[in-house]
Image (cartoon, rainbow, N blue to C red; front, side, top):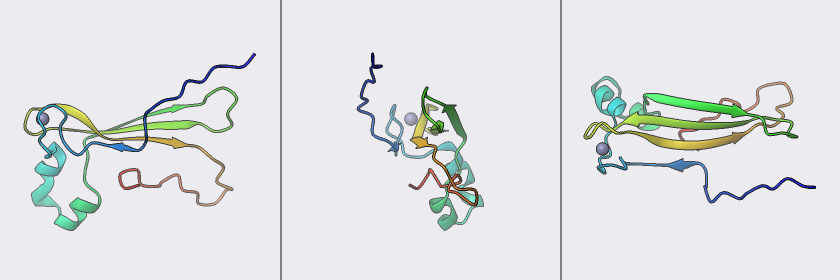
Length: 107
Ligand SMILES: [Zn+2]
């Protein structure tokens, strides 16, 4: 007997560049900190309010899977929405270094 695995249509990473409620592209952190950061730094590594992570290990797999959602707040209507959805599949790193710190904001 084999277990059934259902395919997902979700393609990751998935990014959202504006509020799904009102269409406004400005987020709370970027707007509120605009005057405090040089424009270039803001663009390369924009501050975000929330990031949530689920680490789970499917049965029979050697390495865990990390699901990550990065979220911020729309300054226009207050909706909290996902800016980036990402899935990282664990793999052996061979001891030194590894890429566990790879940027998920700019894949
Ligand atoms: Zn909005």
